[in-house]
Amino acid sequence: MKSRAIGMAMLLCLGVSACAGHATRRNADTIDINKVITVNQWAAKRHATVVWVNHPQKREPQHNDG
Image (tube, rainbow, N blue to C red; front, side):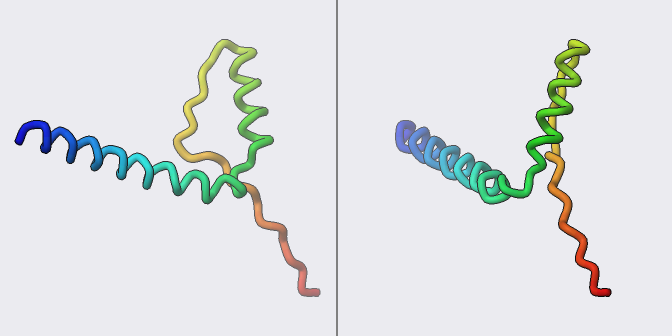
């Protein structure tokens, strides 16, 4: 009984972690990688650490209808 509960808990953890990683892969093409690299390099030169909670998004091109 105890081993079954541990097995179910492990499966639940694997399932939740798979769902959490899926959204980041889907949005990877919208992340502004150049800005992330620039900010990380700037921080490294100053012996600081950057923790990205929300990655910067690429700007949408503006459409002029004129």
